[in-house]
Image (cartoon, rainbow, N blue to C red; front, side, top):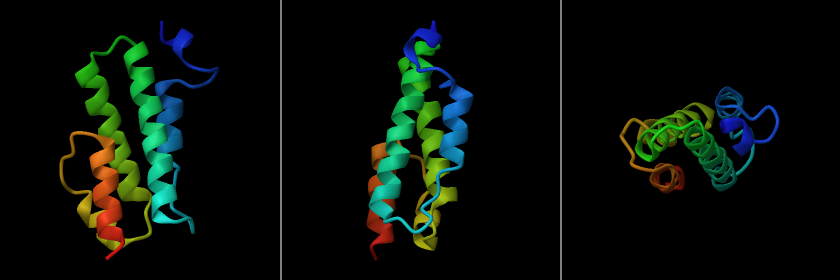
Length: 102
């Protein structure tokens, strides 16, 4: 069923790879966080189409998004702030921006 929900090649593994390869790489922290949030929402949608429960899809996608924020940023304070548990990727992105602008 998930194939009907996603574009060609956009499997969970494909989106996870895109998330894992997303880096701040000279862009602003806000732009980087927006990209990670966008990909995390796409991953959550694909998990839902893959017949995962809403809670499981949210939890798995958020964990992947937080990992991408931690590994992709150039700012030490952001890396440190991602060692907590977040309910949503938006919470994690706001925390990253808050800690990265200090």
